[in-house]
Structure formats: structure tokens, C-alpha cells
Length: 158
Image (cartoon, rainbow, N blue to C red):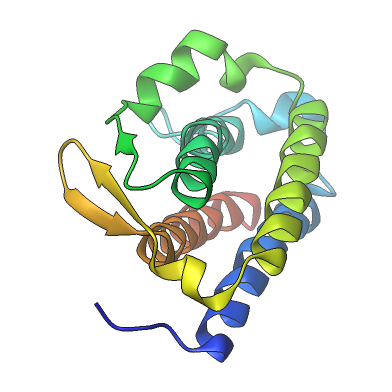
């Protein structure tokens, strides 16, 4: 496994840190009820996209913490869409949900800034994908979020 470079880690953390502000900026002109209306019948609304992002956040943060504090922890596979349905994020007050997401993200980013370079090579054992490093989890998460942010921003810019 390749040791990630400091600048790669910093870039990932910065990308992860900026997502909440990007979302806040994208929706700043939208009223709450508009966020819940799909742009086209059968597509996700802004609230649906963000509900998925919140669900991923809920399920991936504990994985990150487990890898940092335990040796080779088991990482259970979850269905993020099912979790979003269970907790009802798509129907929650968008701005309150975004505030909580933003605060949790700030805590995560603060922790990631404090861990050592070697910690990024720590491994978790995902039940479907096998061994996965902290660096690879954060990298995949950032790419996933940026994809869904682009989806959310595209809806807001219609």
C-alpha cells in the first residue's frame, strides 16, 4: 500500500471540508418547500440528494472513527438509501439538517487534521470490499460527495 503524501491528505481534507458551504451557497435563494420538489417527475429533488448525502455521512463517520481507534475493525456494509428512508432526511427541515451536517463535518475535519500521517494507512475490513485504508475511504467519500453536490447544484441552477 502506497503511503499518501501530506499534500494529498490536506487536499482531501480541504475538499471534504468545503462541501457544506458549497451546498449552503447553492440553495441560498431557494425556499424550503422548493427544495423538496423534484425538477422532473421521478427524479430526486434537492432534498432527496441531500438526504442521501446525510445518510452516507451518518454511516461513514463511524467507519472513519473505528479505523482510527481500532486495529483492523470490521466495517459493516449498509444501504445508505434505506437509512435515508428510515431517518426521513428527505422530509426534514433542510436548513436544520444542513446545520447538523455542517457541524458534524467540522468535527470530522478537525479530527482528520490532528491524526498523524501514518494513521492514513490504517485499515478497516469491509464486509463486501475487503481491506480498505482510511485514505481510500476518505478519497471515495469525497468523490461521492462531489458527484452528488454537482447533481444538487445542477438542480438549483435550472
